[in-house]
Amino acid sequence: MNSPNTHTGTGTIREIGLVFDDLQRHLSDVVNDVQDAKEIRTKSFEQTEILGQELTRHLKGHEFLPRFVLRSYHRSIGALENSAKYMPDPQEVANLVASLQTTFYLILDGECHADRIPGKPRIFQ
Image (tube, rainbow, N blue to C red):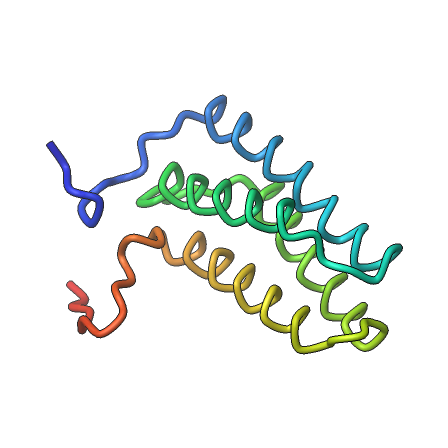
């Protein structure tokens, strides 16, 4: 049995697609809320975070990544960065962007959120 820190990506393209479809819906809600309503709805963002973490677990260790996932994350991050200056609290959007960027870079690095434990040094092999 693998511990959370040794889990390797076992997600099939179908499983990854299903998680990503849910993630994309919530991520779109977050971006639309920021752009149209000038607010961040906590529930949509929290669900985006949960699904993003699940996606990193599915993709962990995969050498080939679905471009549609990377493209969508990248575009959403850019849209939020561009909208931040129009928000009542731009720092709140900056924090949201930083969180999404963390997930994006974990996907690129073949890692998941459980691999990054605060206060514990990482050993690269």
